Image 1 (tube, rainbow, N blue to C red):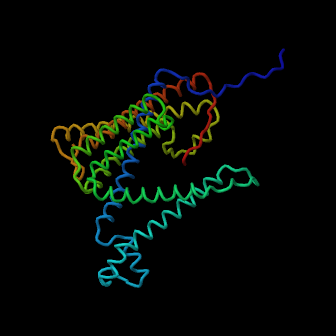
Image 2: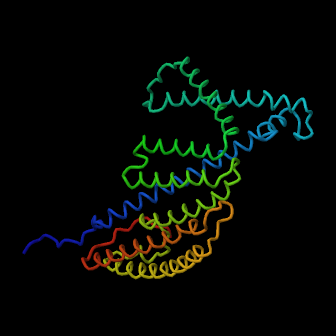
Image 3: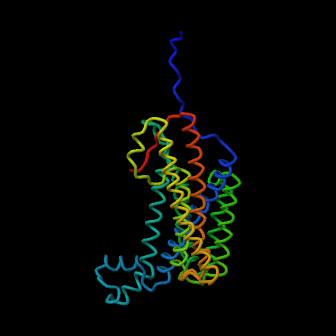
Length: 329
């Protein structure tokens, strides 16, 4: 008789299948679109703030400096003081602060990566001063460009820069699917800038609301694949046998049924918007385009939950043990 104890059921990862490869490609496209939408939202917000300050008679920095000089309100300040601050004090302060920050950044970069106790390399002051001056001049050129160039062209230029960085640093969007998602997303945004935007940034709020729909629902679909969706269940964690997978199947089936109900409602709403041709207030996009990610996300959730349920059935039949992951409870 052998003294070797019987093998325990193993904990194994789901097998890599054709669906896994397809799902990974879809996930890469989703990630590219979400990251791109976040970058566009951030970009438009920054451009709006800069443009509004550059076109204002007295901007935020001017008001701050007037208060430093003892004038509580810009409207009550003497015209000579306002002219002095807006004419040369504000540009001088912004330039000096930028120059100093770049110098500090270069010093920090020179000290980065040094081993403990390792002396830093001797500073190359001529190079640091030249780089700081060039960055400061570049900042002022960018500020005046944002003020003078219409918003649609600034948006197109920013898209070109972001897409160029994506192609240059391929690790930011590795794989054909990620690159395709980046190109499609940039193309859609370029078409929007050309066809729908005006010379000012009045379209920012409407575009941001539309992009939030894609960020929120595509992000929810991605969380389903990563198994990072919120699951409020303490019973699941306490189950240590293969019965865990049977319990998981039941909960996944309930989730799929509920998600299918939401999908039916969203499909009905989408069909109504397509038939009526309603446009989204603010962005002037067809409302069907804005709500499309809701339908797509629910479809992907149903498919991903269903695949997981089928795999849990297989694990239960093989007698595998659960490998509990960190969950939000």
